[in-house]
Amino acid sequence: MSATQPTFTLNANTAISAVGFGTYLISDEDAETAVSTAIEVGYRHIDTASGYQNEVTVGAGIKKGLQGAGIGRKDLFVTAKLWPGNLAWGDAPKTGAQTIEECEASLARLGLDYVDLYLIHAPYGGDMRLEQWRALLEIQKSGKARSVGVSNFNQQHLEEIEAAGLPMPDANQIELHPWSQKPDLIAYMAENGIAPIAYSSLVPLSTWRVEEGQDSAKTDQMKADGSAFATMAANYNVSEAQLLLKWGVQNRYAVLPKSLNPDRMRQNLNLFSFIIDDVDMARMATMDRGEGVAWASGDPSK
Ligand SMILES: NC(=O)c1ccc[n+]([C@@H]2O[C@H](COP(=O)([O-])OP(=O)(O)OC[C@H]3O[C@@H](n4cnc5c(N)ncnc54)[C@H](OP(=O)(O)O)[C@@H]3O)[C@@H](O)[C@H]2O)c1
Image (cartoon, rainbow, N blue to C red; front, side):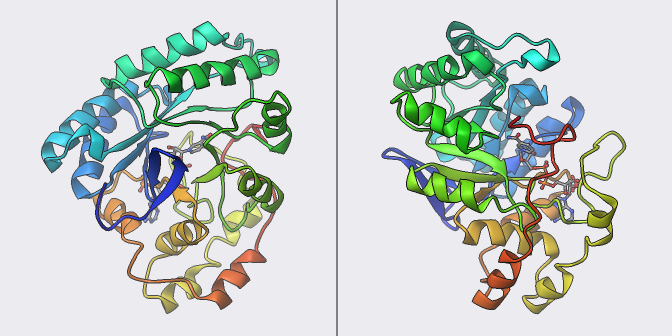
């Protein structure tokens, strides 16, 4: 792991680097260069998913980045995600056996022998949800994932695992930023040793997903309020993006900024020369607006 990056514990043998590089909405054309550049500028954690449909080119970027940075596989933390299916979309939920096959297929596409974290991407498994979770525990036992977890699970979905008497997830990757703080879910996760991983930290920025087709449920009022963090960031002599990412890290959430721009990649990694003071953290704690906006279809936990 990069010496300057703090890590957060996931389980007895695994820690996650605080700043990961996100790969959603990166095309096959861009992925190899984006991921290798990210590793070369210092990222030691890459967040992927079969649902992003770019695992082959992300895998090529990992290989090139490791060579370019002169580091080994063990120096990089890689997350992959199971697409669980979704009956509501006519996509049959994966069985336990299919879950294991899917993990192996992701490893093959990424060109890796194991991942550091394997997640169920969303709680869409319906009747298969617990079977999928049992399969992840098998995957962990087999050594193909060093830690296992879920994503977009709400408290009810986590309680389902608890009620079944199964080991709880090491992590839950969810949308977290000052506008979507999920305090009850975070408190339940803390009680149960489930590490939060924050995605879409940069939602409040006016530059967040501005390309055609990158739609979200961000409201016009949110778009108009996009500069609310500017004054605060200026006080620390950092960008709004750095402030929003540091908010996550100071709350002990790993964050996953995505950028195709090498200057922004460096900026998003450079979070450790300042600390947000208690007054500003308390002010940001009052900014919660409830559910997130990154999934255009609304709350993905439904
Ligand atoms: N588990 C899930 O369901 C889930 C859902 C969503 C996301 N994720 C993960 O989390 C990652 C991050 O989330 P995200 O992709 O929604 O968005 P994000 O990282 O919060 O924001 C990315 C957007 O902000 C822009 N940006 C990045 N750095 C910037 C900076 N320093 N200044 C100004 N603008 C900046 C990027 O544009 P440029 O590229 O042009 O710089 C892009 O439009 C994803 O890539 C994915 O790995 C997971």
